[in-house]
Length: 342
Image 1 (tube, rainbow, N blue to C red):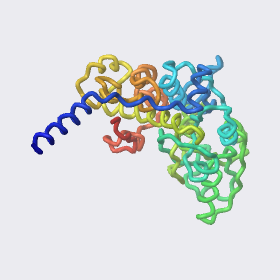
Image 2 (image 1 turned 180 degrees about the horizontal axis):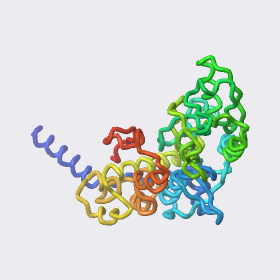
Image 3 (image 1 turned 180 degrees about the vertical axis):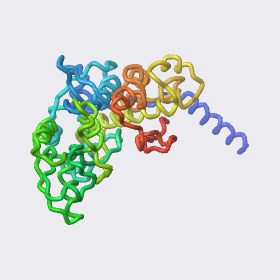
Image 4 (image 1 turned 45 degrees about the horizontal axis):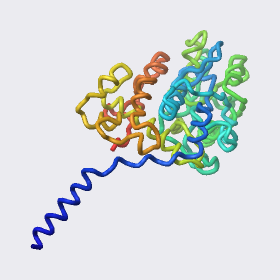
């Protein structure tokens, strides 16, 4: 009798699991709701770093970081073009984040302890691993930091580069002058007018500037990296649900590259029998967006709009001569890695 009762209880439990409803839709947070009500995402970006974030004469924005904005808009609103871009300087970032002028920032921003806490920021996964360096005039013959002793190093204000340059010269016991400007356009203008002996910013920014200059050969990037600069988007700590959407959208882009899901084949992949692809795309009764309070198949819309991580990289950075390096997938020896969609 006891055995029959136990079998009955187990069978009932299994039946309940079999007919259990899908995961309840997550509660929408205040920033996400504001985006939905407005019908657009306000994304603070850089307008003067070709490849990452720049604006053309027609006022159109493009770049690696711009596509992150488009991906988040596609995830929430189903439309990658439902974005209002707000071009900001580096120094404006904490104010813009705290004031609510923008819903998120996707603008070559380094994740640091101070920013994570004092800015009240929630950093999304790192989208580009970088490091600060130096660029000089090729004609100067400078090849090391020691060659810059006593010189003027220029960078833009409100960045971690100011501290990194100071640390690099102080640790080596080298005298130097640090000059800051409001943005990197002003930095380069000063550099080109010989007001600076070298400029310093993230290597990606230096590569971008050299590649898009009138005479790339006149600039030399020194073969030294003086810091770790994990770059990525961020949002206010006031809405964890919105932060989760950004987080899993970025991870979705990475996972799509891992699984070979692209903007060209994503619709064909809907019929894939690969369970990991089904989970990523929210197919075959697998929950994905439902956990985040958005469309369950949100990554289908995202990938259709901007492609996977590798496609975004190849579209904007490869043409500038930026190599994948440590920004290759973990399966290719890089640092780009995403938790599983399950």
